Length: 105
Image (tube, rainbow, N blue to C red; front, side, top):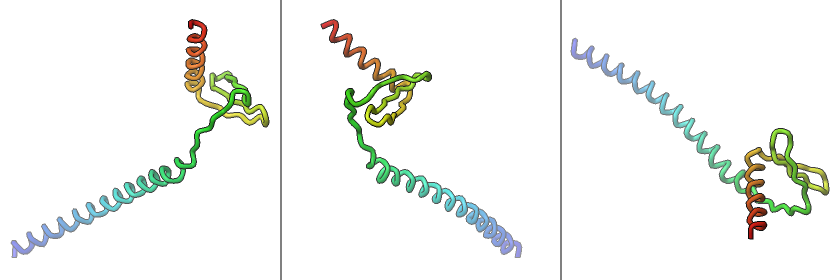
């Protein structure tokens, strides 16, 4: 009888471990599936709607606000876009390098 009780106790132990492991696997699978749905939704719908916009200098005014952020203001309707300060600095560096090269040549 002792062997039968030991086998029954081992079976119950493995059954409890399998239940816990099954719960963890279900939760992990749900998290992974949720991440994949979110990632591929963005990839298929949001990313494809983004388009690069070409702006003519004559149609806009460019300014820098007190926080150093670049502002591009549409002259026709006054709508403006604000970009991070690093974008403004990078555009200024490109423009300054271009002007410097024109003067040196």
